Length: 134
Image: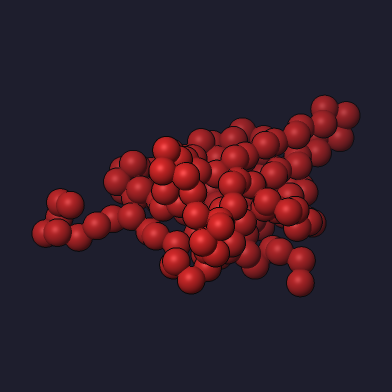
């Protein structure tokens, strides 16, 4: 721990995870490493997350995460890919999948992961949480 003993990881509260959902010892923890990005990259991550979330037109709950429909007129495939590239660098436990349909330029995004990741998505990304179907 540098910076005066201050740890820069965000940890998922243990109360959210059931004992059966705890990761195996060889898996990276469900924790974001904020030191993985520079201050400029963190600002870009935040900007791209808000921008992409504003372009979400639909969401669907999955057993291991969420799926989102993104309006390509509001957020391009390149912007979504850059957002995910930055996000995965600080939070490598996520699994991302993007489907891009050439005919209509439709973008579909899946944010998933092992047990415990689904519950962490709203904690880690309030802008995505605001787009989840109620």
